[in-house]
Structure formats: C-alpha cells, structure tokens
Amino acid sequence: MIQQITRGLKVSIQTTYQGSFVKNKVLHYAFRYHVSIENQSNHIVQLISRQWKVFETASVQYFGKEKGILKKPTMKPGETYVYNSGCLLTSPIGSIQGSIKMIEFSTAKKFNMKIPCFKLNVPFILN
Image 1 (cartoon, rainbow, N blue to C red):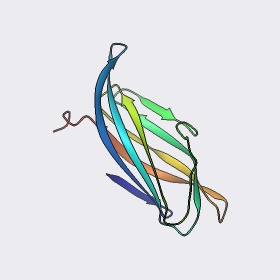
Image 2 (cartoon, rainbow, N blue to C red):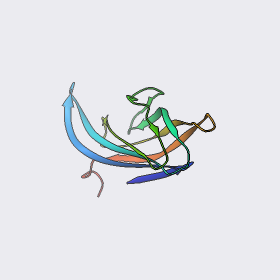
Image 3 (cartoon, one colour):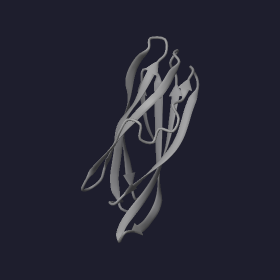
Image 4 (cartoon, helix red, strand yellow):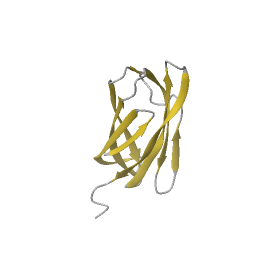
C-alpha cells in the first residue's frame, strides 16, 4: 500500500493484478486500484479534478483534468472518500503517478494533492 499526506489529507492506494487477455491481437494486463482519501485536517475540502500519468515500458499516457471524475465529493474533517478504478497496460510492468486538485472551503484556495508513484506489476514477472 502506498500512502501520502498533503495538507492534512491522507491518500492511500492499493493495487491488484486482475489478469490478462488478448484484444486486437495484443496482450493486455488488467490492474485495479483502490483509492482512499481521508480528511485529517480541520477544514472542509472538495475534490475537483485529477491528473494521472500512466507509465508503461514503451509509452506514457496522460489522463487530464476531468477524466474519470464521476463525483466531486465534499469531505468534512474526519470523513473519508473511497473509490476504485482500473488500468489496462500492454506491458506487464508499469506505474501511475499524478495529482488530485482540491479546494479548501474556508480559504477558497485550490491546491494539488500529490499522488506518489504506485507500481502496477504482474506478480509472476518480478521475483
């Protein structure tokens, strides 16, 4: 599990390998990741957007501002927001890093919560 705290917001990410399949004659590897954001601050905050960089052996994919954001939750102090997402890679080893843009209601200031690099590895590839 990967964890990071930014301005009193604790993000935890856990990944799991889901399996592989062939699509258009190309082998794909499926990964799932579980994201938990816990508001340990004394402020009400809201998730606005996220940006991910997905790294593979031969490429980098960028997922911008609104991509994948179905909800823009507001979190009071002590509350936690949890969501699951997934990623398909064409190589058995990859990683994701990025940021989540938040707004703090008491100051109306926006800030980026850094998402540390987390690995997506097929378990039997690395010994």
